[in-house]
Length: 287
Length: 279
Image (tube, rainbow over all chains, first blue to last red):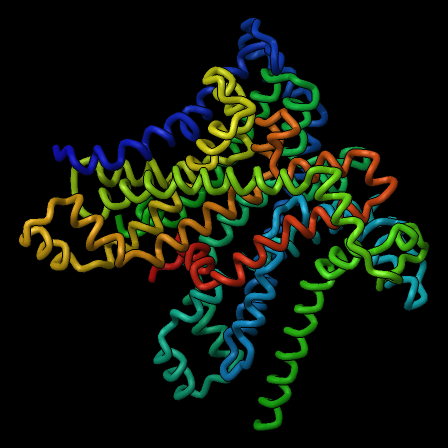
């Protein structure tokens, strides 16, 4: 056994063990207790938190909302990202780098700032959207009432779409020119060479991208927190929002950990689908 | 055929420009609100172009509401996270790139696999871990959490760069009497500069933009970083009296990171695609 590389890896491993791996077990452990956030005392309650959680109407609601939210956000990000990447990849496009940089800008900004901006864009009285709608002669809408979920889906997708765009665009650049030449010789038009050369070459990166954005979307609620805070009537109450409220607003650490454990399990299931689809080795490239 | 090609090209530009407009208008609107005088704020329908641009909102936000010091705190934590994450990741990446050993595959998968652990769900247990380490409400606690969140991808980015350096170069240096540490300092590090830029940028952005971790783990107002302080302002009376100051704060927090991104976009895009696209 060589000692040197292990010693080099040790600090990273130590930090990750304490702050990334241990929390998974800690969450499960805490979920077995009745414990307040800052209370030093706690009592063992076994699986009672789970029984309470599974009969909690709000859990099932948040799972349903999360499914719609994540599904829609992922679909929009992926297809819009693919579309923009294709446009950016068109031959002889001028200003390609400028377009790309502009499209990425929202993605580098904190979700909090983005949430604030969208809360105010969609505001009933003072929002830009309603001002625009009234300028062209329509009646203004309350975007954060019946259509609240759609609104936060659009806001989130607007924020993060460029991640998929960048990934897909760099993969497109990596497709060998010869493949397109060959398709041309066979008489393929632009659509056909996109359909039969570009898309099949993007299979791997697309699947990878889909899993990544699924996890990112599922694990972020900053936009929702600012724009709707889960409301109205829990219509936008995704699992992250529900968990955070339970643990840090109602100061119920035990119950919050129970939700966190469910959260972990769903993430692991998504990750397993990923590993199943790609094989273990893709997790670390050519390990 | 020619005409069709031309139409397609025109259409491409039209769509791209529409999307540029969709991308920039919300941000432009944020900046416009930040320079609106108070009298413009509560107009219905809203005033789009400020009637008399003012810097008052910035003075209010940065001086009186303390957003300036929040940004400074964010900067300290971002730099701190970088100073922990980059050296730790460098050592590990070098270990993985230079040697083959028994547990290599297992350790690599374990480390990269931690990326799959959601930050969101770790929040509750992390709170109790920092509590037992007495690191709640400290920068050290936050820096360690951010370092742990960025180490896997940084190892991955740097490992790629280290592996691209031909083994012969390192061997030649060893033959010349360099110790492994010498090889790392004199040969590997200078050649991997773009990798460091990408990793550093990723780490700074991640911690600068973090919201939930800081909001959860910090309590003292004077320690608060930028995003949570923005959230607290959002729930405060300032929103109902002079929300122009909110948008001045938001703009002040967004501009530095946008500048950083535009200046180093090449490295940023590299970091973004490092986890997925093989070079």
